[in-house]
Length: 310
Image (cartoon, rainbow, N blue to C red; front, side, top):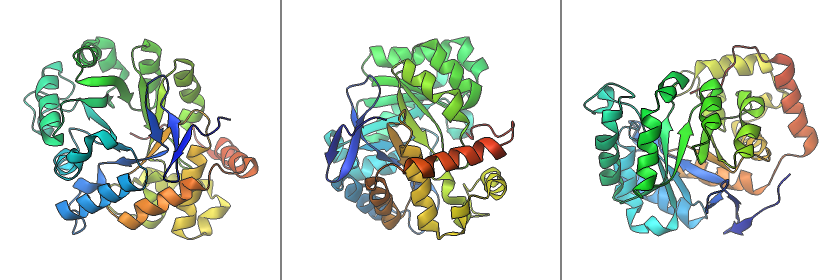
């Protein structure tokens, strides 16, 4: 198991693969702030993100398809650009205001130009190809476009965001610096399929959905996958009878206990929730008995169709 690289303001930082970045183990996932809600205001987002940065968080992740997320991030923290690493993604098309269908390489330029404009920056620390299939990757055009962004300095590093055999193929190309993939108490395919292979390539590993969208307290809500609800009912971990915060803590610390994992992204509009995730992460890895019990339960119960959730 790895040791801590550094601690800033109480937040552990880990080296992101072979990049030059030391990243806080908890970063901010930018999807939730764009969902329509009374909590989602510029002022609320300003307080949320700036407080997170003040507490030692140094990664903000978003995407061109996250509705107004990029604009809100640009409006609220672009003046602190040197205080954090900024990740975004491209790939989607017409349904997100771009001229061509999804995964059409002709969308890359207008997508990236919009991303930079909205984020009020002239570069990204990591630009990911966003959850396309292996078949799309095999065409090579999007990979070439990502490599060109890196050559031009628009993206310092490039990555693939996705799961299952699609992520496995992306790793095997050898061209990506970072993998972003799903891992949680409800989603553990990556633990055996991709994490080790990514680390063997020197890739950074970023985890999305580390707290499984908190489906135990959000059933029926938007962005609360029913697939996770079904899985957790079958897995029936003993700690699922505890309160929501205790389950969130267990899931987040479980993810951060994997030696391959550098960073977990927590998406929220709620400042208290974000700060509690920092507190949970500060408690460190689960003890080996707790970690092994979760892994064994998954291995005993999971079904072959339980692939990583996009």
